[in-house]
Amino acid sequence: MRRRWPKKLKKEGIALNKLLKTKELFDCRVPYLVPLFEKVEYPWEMLPEISDYINKLTEKGLSGFTEISKGVWVGENVKIYPTATLEAPAIIGSGTEIRPGAYLRGNVITGKNCVLGNSSEFKNCILLDGVQAPHYNYVGDSVLGNKAHLGAGSICSNLKSDGRSVVIHGDEEHPTNLRKVGAILGDMADVGCSCVLNPGTVIGKNTSVYPNTTLRGVYPENSIIKSAVNVVERL
Image 1 (cartoon, helix red, strand yellow):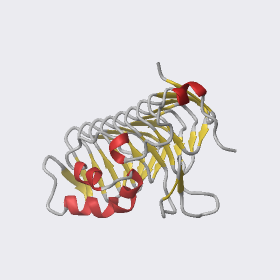
Image 2 (image 1 turned 180 degrees about the vertical axis):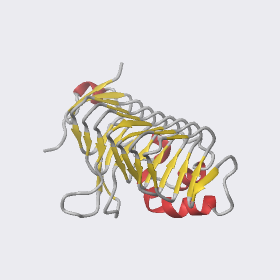
Image 3 (image 1 turned 45 degrees about the vertical axis):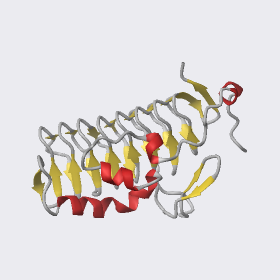
């Protein structure tokens, strides 16, 4: 059944399903990520390139970063708790905190002042400045914008049950030709506790999601998502 959006939003002409392009979702100011963000039209196009991109960045060393183990580079004032696990390749921005039990499975790039929380798992993902995933989160094959936040227990599911390539369901179908695509969260997106973002879910800038919500598809910016079929404008 096709999603029914509130009439108020339709009348005001908000582009409910059209904000899919990288430049519409993110204002990337992380110096070492700007070239990657400018290169692609859609954010999921970055996912297959993360590993090679990290390796190219670190071949000659990153100014202001220290290689703490082979292939793992951290900026200044990064706090890593002893029970966290960081697998290469990874670039961790300055001021970031990696809490107890966090597991970085490789191909992770963060901006500055992020929180990678206790017992949370990250793989093949990009986190811009100020991202918080502080408690029991899973972030796989995803892109999280500036100051995006995941509530406790929320996950970015990245694999369809049938194993087929992920399709982004907006006004039009956008095949990614990728077997794994998690969530795309625009700048300032805020996801409540215990939410499931199904493969290929896109949340627009400055949009909040109620707790215990399961989502699939593309959701507008500057909105409040009360359920998959109840979305209202943020006043």
